Image 1 (spheres, rainbow, N blue to C red):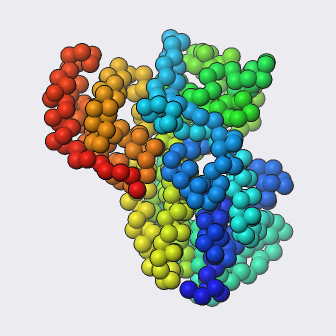
Image 2: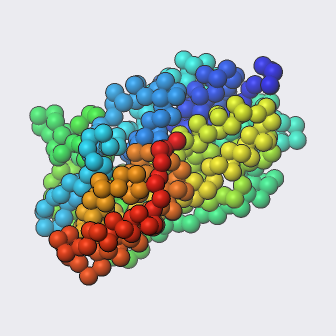
Image 3: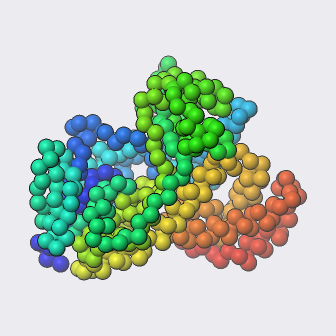
Length: 453
């Protein structure tokens, strides 16, 4: 590919857009990124509703390739596992992995975005803020970008990449020309963000190295640590029923809910009423597309292609993995249509898999983490993983600590879940379980996994 054609235009300067721009610029591409919002490094981050992000190995691998891991990890807070808060006030830490080598990291979206923009600019990416996509003339290969005054500017392009989130303007432009097979499935639940401030001495009010969770059946509350010693608290409720956002409408209603159902969390959130009244309710939905590309003209990635609910903490990690895959496919061929098609072929099945696992994880987090049957199966899972490390790898570990395809993790996880249910049926303790039988089932049903990619 000659130098003049080695140019790409990215729509969206959020996390995926900034990272992809860096990966391509480091490969010698000329990259222009257009963002409808102002530069958050000057105007401050205006991301609106944002559940804290959980950075895992897939995301860290992408950051390493972009030379961004060190800058990001300076502000990340380690989370060893889920700290479950039971209704009776008890707490129990359920580790994510075997030890502190298998953890996830809490990062704030705004700070991460700023860090990635600095690194993108240093890599030579051309960043254009206050320039939203207003439409695309695919025949002329011209994008129309709008400034804050409503004036339109024609921007010629070689190829467009949509990294502009779940409400993607590029996806909208593509769908006017091509049937993308778009469908949206609403979860029927929403969320509100609250905050636990630092303690009087400036430290954390509760254990900092954990994702705190208050599971209550149809609803739950979680809290993730921030490096400024606060916690971002997220209340998840159904949209209808009791309780729901239909019945919990005001800050006073929310305080009453917390006093009743999250009693140990309530005193930690002094500004609960104000936060609840001032923060908009976030919507939770899954976006499915059958087609992410339009020949060599355009391709979608991240939330623009496959927005998912946040309950596996993989939305950002999956988007970052998309960026790495797209950059690699563009390296392999000068034919952009072929590169985009190969990217979609690789990533779409894996996006579908993590979307399914994210939905399943919501049920687990809100319904099962405090359930005796679940805890027994989890204890057996840990035993089998220790005895058969090459065959029985917990699904969470495959998703979070490894980089094997999401689709592989989903398929093997289904086999493992059925095996655990079968072996523990009728038991309430590990003491009565036939370990030899369990070992035979593992060897019969689970071939060696091999090393992650």
